[in-house]
Image 1 (cartoon, rainbow, N blue to C red):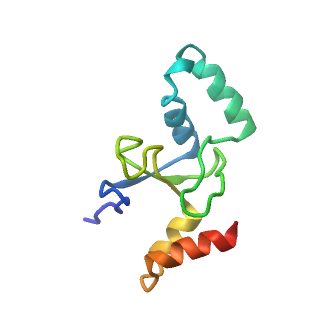
Image 2 (tube, helix red, strand yellow):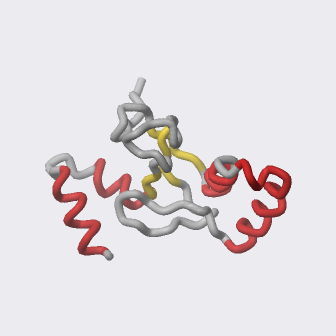
Amino acid sequence: EDEAPRCVCGSSLVRVGGKSRLWKAILTFPQFQAQREAIYQHLLRAGNALIVCDLCHVQPTTSDAVWTCENGNSTIFHPTSYDVCDKCFVKWTCNPGLQPSDISASASAAS
């Protein structure tokens, strides 16, 4: 059986759809509890998943899947959750010769 990919914090990364990730992001704002469904519907219509890929800094849409950490924002390694878009996930997991410094250099060049 394949082992789940690991996050920088040591927990597992799981692949989720953009709509699910949007809902999870909304749940992190307790001050909007009464308006959660309305906010979700508004952002869904706009295609805004409320997150940014932590590697390339591109904002996925609600139709994109992302890899997110099961720890959410419960770790000091990434206090605002950790999300990786599919494009970055494939790029960095299918190139075993890359070094961690290559990631920051590539992200800087993409900005």
